Each structure stands twice: as C-alpha cells, then as structure tokens.
Amino acid sequence: MSDSGARVASRGVKRPSVFWVRLVYMLVFAANGTVSAYLTLYCRRVGLDNTQIGVLLGVQPVVMLFSGPAWSVLADRLGLRSRLLTVVLALGMLPGLGMMCTTNFAGLLALVVVQALVMGPVTPLLDSIALDSLGNERHRYGTVRAFGSLGYAPIVWATGVFIQTQDIRWIFVLNVVFLSAACIASLRLAQERAKPLPGTIGKGLGTLVRVPGWLAVMSAYFVAMTLQSVTFGFANLYMDQLGASESLMGAAQALSSLGQVILMAYVLPRALRRWGSAWLLVISLAVYTLRLAIWTLCPQATVVGLSQLLNAISFGAAAVAAVDFAARHAPAGMEVTSQALATGLVAGSGRAVGSYAGGALYDGIGPRPAFGAFACVGLVAAVGYALLWKGRAPAAEGRASAESSPAARERGSRATGQGQAAERATCPDSSQDAAAAS
Image 1 (cartoon, rainbow, N blue to C red):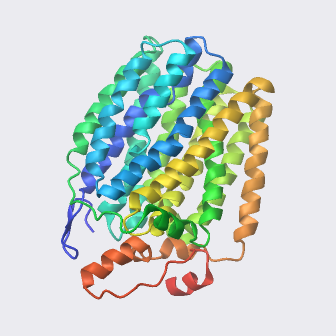
Image 2: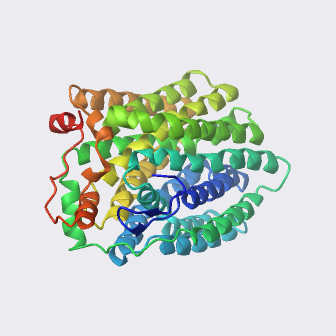
Image 3: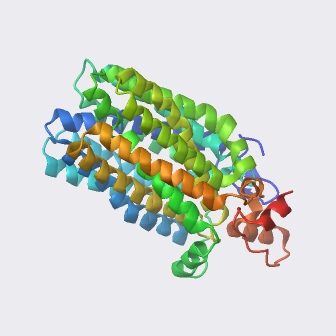
C-alpha cells in the first residue's frame, strides 16, 4: 500500500491519508514536548515539593484510566474517530491556559485532572486511525508513530533553550499553538463512518481478555510503563539536582526522541515481525533496568542526559509491542476501545504507580536509592517474563497477517462475500501460530 494512498480499492473504503496521520502525530507530540518535560520544573519553580509533584504526575494517568476507555467506547459505539479527535484536541487547549495563571497545588491539581479528562482518548484514537490507514501493513505502525518523535525532539530541545532565558510559563502558550495546529490538521483525516460495535461492550471485553496471553503481555506492559513514568517524570528533576541547565535537559529529551525516530521507522517494525510483541517487551524491561542502573551508579548530569538515548529502545519497543498486540486481538467494532485498554487502562495504571511510588521514594530515601530500587524491579520483571516465554515462538506474532485479528477477519469476510467464520486468533506465542507463519 502506498503511504500517500487514502483509499483501498480492494475494499472500496476511504481510509485516512497516511500523510495527514503523520502530520497530526507530529503536531500532537510537538505540543507534548512543550509541556510534558518541563511541567515538573514549573511546579518546582512555583514552590511545590517532590511529593506534590509526584501526585500531579500520578493523577493524570489515574484519570485517564477512566477517561480514555470511556471516550473510546463512545467512538466505537457511534462509529466515530477522526471527528472525536478534533473535539478533544480543541478542548485540550483550555487547561494549559489555566495552568499558566495558577501557582498553588490545588489549582494545578484541578487543571491536571481536567486535562486528563479531555486528552485521555488522544493516543488510542490516533493509534487506531494510524492502523486503519495502513490496512494490511499494520506492522509498519512504527513508521507512522516515528513522526510523533520527530515532532517531539526539536521542540522539546528548542523549548528548553527558550525558557532558559524566558519566563517558564511560555511552555503553556507554545502548547496551545501546536494543539491548535493539530486540531486543524485533524480535520483532514476524512474517513467513512466506521461500523459501530456489534453486540454489547461487555461481550467484546470478555472476548478480548480471554485471548490466550493477553493478561501476561499486558502485565509486562504495565511494568514497563511504571518504569517509564519514573525515567520520564523524574529525569529533569534529577538532572536539575545534578546541576544541569534547561538547555541540557531539552537536548537530552531531543536525543531520546531522535533515537525513537530511527528505531520506529527502520528497526522496530522488523524486530516486531522477527520476535513478536512478547519479546519486545522483555527487551524493553531489560533496557529500562540498564537506564536506571546508570542513573544509580553514575550520578552525573551529562551521563544521565546521554542515557536518555536508551529511551528509544525501552519506550519504543514497549509502545510498538502493546499497540500491535491490542490491534491484532481487537474484537470487530472495538478497535479504539482495545487500544484504550492498552494505552489508557494498562499504561495509565502503570504510570500512576510509577509516579506515586517514584515521588514518595525520591523524597523518602533519595533519588539514587529510589532509582536503584526500580532497577531491581525491572531486572526481576525482565528475567521473569523471559523465563515465562522461553521455548515458545513469539516471532509468529510479528509475522502473522493483519487478517488474524477479529476486526480484520470481519472486514475480510465482508469484502469477499464469503461470510464464513474465520479461525479464532490465538496467542502469538503459540506453536500453532509458528507453524502457520512458517
């Protein structure tokens, strides 16, 4: 399928243009780059302590546990995606404007909650639209998602340089500028009204959670996102404590995102087809362990900054693995909800645990012992899941056809007119899938 193609002749279905999907990814993540990496610094500048900062970091994913899936169920129920994305991007500008005028903990907490309520479905909606635009080439998701990192990297660096000599509240103004552009660009994500969810939400969720391997893969993703919350949320606080400038912090975040661009565009799609989601998560956990070990053993701002390059592997591998696994096993009509369960419910709960525990340990025992403790968690998880999946064939997962998911099977049945029931998708780690793929 051509990247610029907006239609699939074989299905006669109008798809979102890959070009516009990439542009929206770029603008949304550019907006994130203006605020996400510097919100903790803003909170410190206005007098909040580390525990309060941890609460602010943790409350957002907690709210997204409910807001992301709730919005996504609405999108699946009504058969709407792109227009709902436009609405939530427009609403997402308002809390940022309020934050730049707020310096007390209660006010910031309320605005963070509101922001999480309206922005919760952005990632699952974007991921679902991206996968739809790729059709049967879903394994190339990383080549689309890489444009998010491409938008994030220069902006997070430029923002750091800018606020080094300017009022830090400019981060909120820049955030609104990029969200406005993303909102306008999302209007070009034209697509036919998707088929609403057949049956009930409960039945669809029951089908999803009974997929062999679902709970194991999602639990590994939960641990990875717990470690991601620690390494992302407290990186700049740690570097600030080690004497780093805002420009060095921005450069470190930019290096991280530029590495993601290369890996997601060229390496991770191939790794997914070769090893599958399960083993990508093991790799992710191992690299998170390495990053945290470096922070513990080498408390130097430059070393910590350079270690951010490893985020391209740790976060990139986990994100690609979770999105692919959720997409392949989504029941027909629950494509957005399936993504929301992975990137909202599972990732959100992991980030919440990481933020709350990270904030408490950072204040209670100090940064180096805290990072050391999380490194031990990552090591145990990486070894444990490697032993769990040892001897199985997760590579079949990555090589499996896009038609293996329930949603894709239903689309294929409608296109060919055969109406026959497709074989139920099984866990990618199974030996049956390995035989089929070979």
